[in-house]
Image 1 (tube, rainbow, N blue to C red):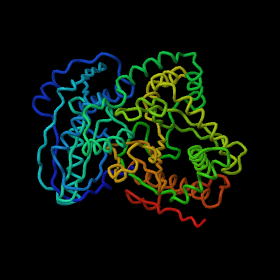
Image 2 (image 1 turned 120 degrees about the horizontal axis):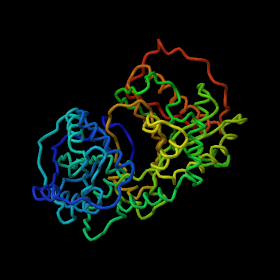
Image 3 (image 1 turned 90 degrees about the horizontal axis):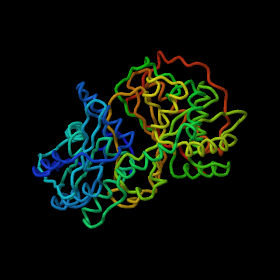
Image 4 (image 1 turned 120 degrees about the vertical axis):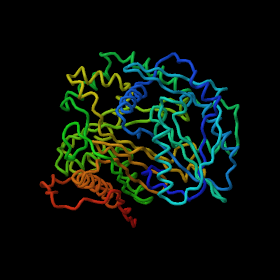
Length: 493
């Protein structure tokens, strides 16, 4: 499984099929009662934002998707059975949301009412036709104010077929997409409608509300969040370099991908991090702090990371839904002269991040207000770091998982959040970046330097921290290509 840009998933041409609810299922979904109980803060906030965007006529691109390739001629009836069991098994996928201003209501379709039927859409003969088909379907069908808030289909050829799924973000996250197609493929091969499936995301929402209630304004985590914002100018973390956008401005997304290390380099970097008293992830944190410092951003690194909360809640390990927490990462370089000297500090920052991630998002935003932040400060989207190790997902080793890709909708952004991912063969990064020439030069400058720092550690066993470079005149530099790959570093030891 890997994360990539949608345009980079190029299944072979074939005949397109679409699955949609049967008429009786649609009627039952429209009449589904309002469910009691809370929603998670992230899902509810997303539904409100999507509703406002739709009312302004903004295209819906707040979705996540995945695709894979399976061998053998497709059995359409088996696919129908697999999709039906899959949606019945996950209550969040049986949900649709009604939004009227600030009020969000959740409707949940009864298990027995869920039924799908297949429709043949005709041939897709070129990569361009396939890309256009996927984007059109995802934008039109993955809205969570209707059931289902997902788009599912296959592109079939005589000897195999591509399978894809897209979901509104209110119903899904990156880990959910890594789980989804492997589960669908498993149900396609061996359907088991009696398996009750993993924990209910709606139970998770209840648990989150209870945790938020327990974290009052006097809890240690709340106070640490408050002090973090006060220490960092009452703002969310932004991209370390100036991207040339005025406050409030955004630009169309330009996807960026870079390979960082091959298998040998991964092992070497891991050994250096552990020998220095840290972990692989704390080594990534240290490299980001060093990169910012060497590019003139100062010796204090302030970032925000996203964590998969399934790790602490095993009953939800295979659940569909948005299971995320956020926490700040702060690292001061201090007197550290090398990467290995900084790793223990980065390790402490990582442990603090894990602790602060136990504070639900709504409580963290309350801490920001308590520190003196304005409403505009609170609603601004932070620049995020996500780290995923794809070796540990339950589908690992199966064709559907190993051939799978994950992608997201591409709208507009003012940030360059980064997804750093690891599998058995490589460490690589992806980012959705502002597509202006100046921003492209800046993000390539930063990410190229980050890759070089990590590569230096892997090759030489350490990296000596150097003083910030002098100001770089970017005015006449040609903008890099829209989607650029950096070759893997070569390691001979």
